[in-house]
Length: 417
Ligand SMILES: *Cc1c(COP(=O)(O)O)cnc(C)c1O
Image (cartoon, rainbow, N blue to C red; front, side, top):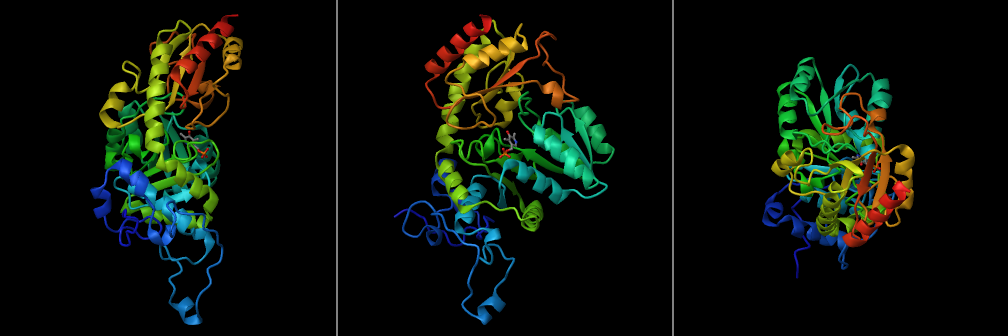
């Protein structure tokens, strides 16, 4: 029954050594089958929680012949055990072009670890201005202390980016769509320019995941995800991952091991459980988000909807060209609202919780004011009245969209009160 035993497919940290199984099955099947080697699962269906810090050797001779730093050789718990290897392997299987996946205790740890893996003192980093705020804090905090100089740039201005690359850049950190402000970037074009100037290309691909954007096949060298969002999917764990082709996998693996990056087997099992249903959840939350985005577009309280999946929204054409899916996360710019009105709207929402993070089964809404964390990108976006600057970001979950729309409707009424 089934094909749970695939001995030669990968080594045990998720490094693919043979692509045959990966090319045989399609994504939905890989999400179901990924990481279910019989030596990891035993007689149960999903890899169980396998705890252990210490590996006992059979004999002195066994210890001497062991290869302490070989992939999949269980030598000490910090390198993970079967529960973590199973998740890493499953993630590698859904990332086209990936030689392996590393796991981190958060998406933020994955961002720091991969940047530290490819940068050294004296290097310059080009940072997309629409990046997640903690990415900026990493660049201007610990990376600056390491002697790395960071230059922000507008990812929609390819000419200026080329000038920046010409001036000498060791790496570029991209995010598409951008956090909160949702700019879709021309990743293949940016990567091509960066590579012409010998820079490493990193992408925070949390929004799309490999199901929505095949980062490594679009020119990216190292692709990073916060598994806290779509993979976990249930707002009950934090984790991050990074994947790369042969050229950079060894470097990110070595950095993660030296830094002591580790995830617990309990969280790895939870994340792996989330992965099994990720494609269905993403498809449903994408459809729900689109329904809400369309409805919001018609409202007088909304100056602009920033939702890449929505025809006419900024970045939609690039999204259509490069992406194979969306998700439930999008933003709006409010019209003629002040902060008190925005607060009344958010306080009146009942089904939308107010809180950070996103990608869970439940809907969320938060206010945002990007001027504080941007210095290159124009805000408000083109087409908005300059007075309309207040943003709201929605993470649409799996509720009934009629209920969500009724909730938004009564919250807009409260906003006017
Ligand atoms: C949440 C998030 C992260 C960080 O993830 P954590 O797991 O919370 O550390 C990184 N990038 C983006 C785009 C995010 O939204």
